[in-house]
Length: 532
Image 1 (cartoon, rainbow, N blue to C red):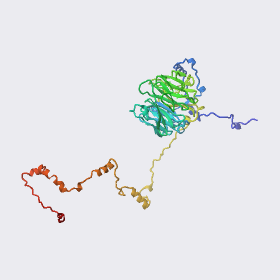
Image 2 (image 1 turned 30 degrees about the vertical axis):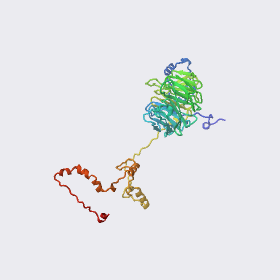
Image 3 (image 1 turned 90 degrees about the vertical axis):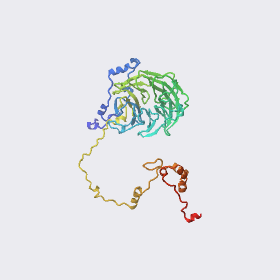
Image 4 (image 1 turned 180 degrees about the vertical axis):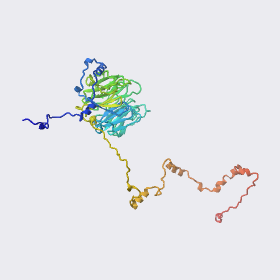
């Protein structure tokens, strides 16, 4: 039996879970990203050292990359050097080559994409690294200052590390860094522990509950003097820490002993190095430096497992949530940035390049952060912008929440006439009766009405009042004034012979004309005193 047209439209045609999509198709078209032209693709292929025939060019759909559309967050005035997502993907923290750090909260954003707060850890210090802990409640900020600063998710300061004594030569004897920080990372198994690396050749482990240093590792190289620890990373189970310094890589046990590294390799790279462990792996990690990426096994650092060359950039790398793909940010390698930001997609097990993706924005890619919960990627560019890429079919929430949300419009009050409130005039105002007790308490609180004497000033004097301290009372008891106990006549007669032998002032003028004074010998005293 056939159904009518009016009834058939209310009956579903299919069942099961539906894919989520953007509410408005027009908004999705505005944020859609155009693929690079064939000429640009050929140009990127020629930069790879491997032959073009050996590179398997996979499409974005085959790789399940959330890069079909993107939005821009424009608030920084300098290059974005650090990015960090919280665990749910609702907020992101960004730092620049300057002192400002912006806090972004996507559920409260509209289509203008403005941050809800800005913090400055230290004036004039560049932000080098930002990391959230595993639970997403706090994030740590490492700047060019020797002290790391801990913040809550809302941007409130929760703690600050101590700085060491720069005049102490042995770095084990100081309780903090004496040089600018270079890197920071959280212990994945403990939210109250993190590690920092600085330019004083040390790795220091910290406890956020007391904000004190737990252990210190002094990194030693063949180079004389102090070297900068440019990168550090915990393994997935938190048992090992990998550090990079002066082109070398060292593997340390996270709980000690720290006398010497478990594994070490020199000249792994010839320049500054960045490190990242493969997700859910305890022994595989990658390093990037001098335009190449290398895959290492902590059990044997004598030679790398795999290597990819021709990747010029600023040491920005990030793994996909499942650990199968590795994103490598590309740059021009010079002071002039690229006309179009590019990202290379590599296989994490072999480091073979799948393809290169254009973000559709100018600049170099300086930082990358991939959130696994909402499946969105944030790219920090040298132009000061943050590009967040997503796919309506693969991503959820995050930057997609503010695309269709319009900003609120406030209607201004257009009334220009005078507002008359006659009962507020003193003529019509009736004073409330005040109780006697309340008036008495009010007078007692007023120092002028109650004639309250001024309190003594402790310490240094101020406001024309001499200060009083404990030393003044002690000196009064030691140095007593005995002038009241002396006889004034005896005190003057002490100087009679001196005045007669060496007269001064008026007496010498009348010496020749003045006669010799004759004093009376009678003492004008009461009768009772003379009897005594």
